[in-house]
Image (cartoon, rainbow, N blue to C red; front, top):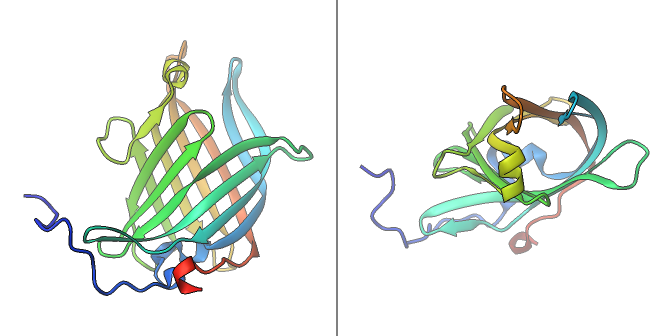
Length: 209
């Protein structure tokens, strides 16, 4: 049996327009953040290489979103990462963090200008201080899609991110991107982590202004 209703058109009637009040576990992440302690473990021809980085993340609330009866509250995000003392962008990423109150589902969508997109999901309580999301390439939903060269040389098979909210108002993440690299027998775990400190409050979503 399907987990969904036969009525796929009727939208909820009790939508609260104040996204910042309805983000569940994503609520503490809203705002503008900077991190000075990032660590990236990336693949190179001679083996894994560590790279320090600094980061800025903007997470701004969007208006409530419906798919028929399905209701999401979310944050639009932009990530800009550079190496210490350098201006050139090291990594850029855009997407959405979404919270579905009815099912306790957290979703992260991501797109990077290497020709790659992904959508990861996980379950969490509304007041959770830690949660983990996963995307796998073999899934029909919450998957990974890459351009032909990345499929050839650095095939991503799994993406995993764990978020931890700290009592002092900071939050951090740990990412593990599993890749099959051409010429290598074992999967490579591309690891990233950072601790974020708030530098600006979020701007209310358009309907709530």
